[in-house]
Image (cartoon, rainbow, N blue to C red; front, side, top):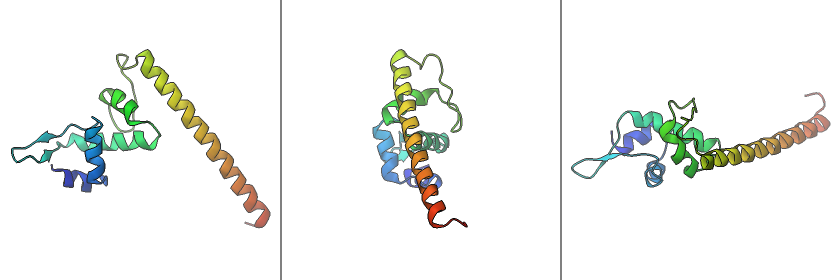
Length: 122
């Protein structure tokens, strides 16, 4: 499929798909006329990339672990992938994500406390 169809089917703009290629996350083939050609597995790969980006991982980390992932909802790192450097990067990312979660939870609690004061019956 061409990049426009991949974009339509995944909801990811073509500009982002090109960026994923630049970041070595997607590997389309080139047809004789120069168009990018993606096979059907690119649909799942784009979902994985989006999910990992949405979770806060950087493209650098995603590039390291992507070859070892099975499906968009499973992150099972193959032992060969988990070098000490990658493990440290993942630990740092997990800690950063936890800080974000803690901050968001604090903000949610503050909003709910405010609402409880101004709208006690709700």
